[in-house]
Length: 142
Image (cartoon, rainbow, N blue to C red; front, side, top):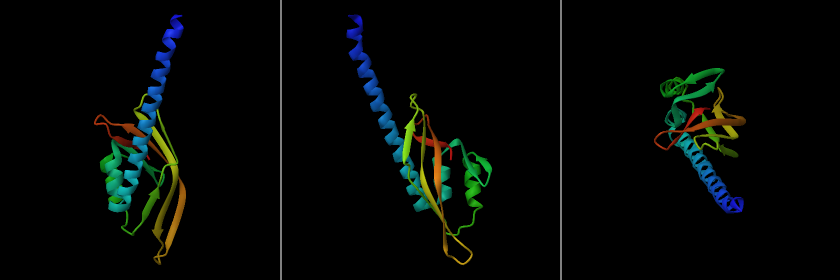
């Protein structure tokens, strides 16, 4: 009899946990969309610096670049040739703890060749996100 009394409570908790995770997934997807929008409007350097966690890491040209300052420096050293990066997550998941998440999906990087003709590079991105103490999501790996 005690089990039957306890069962509705367990079901209620698991439903609210699922709702909480769905809410967090939406937060992460919205953050990813804002990140892509900022990159399109303000440039890759400012967007990657802003959305990086203090210890965030990017992997570029087989080199790991760690921390906001290093990420900004990396992008500052890239030629301003009108390159663009467009992406959108096709999958978002959040850890049961609610403090880590990951996304992946298609991206397209477009840059001009030596004659100014656009070259498109397509692939799949993968980003790992961590919830910050201030309640924002910032990437720890991109």
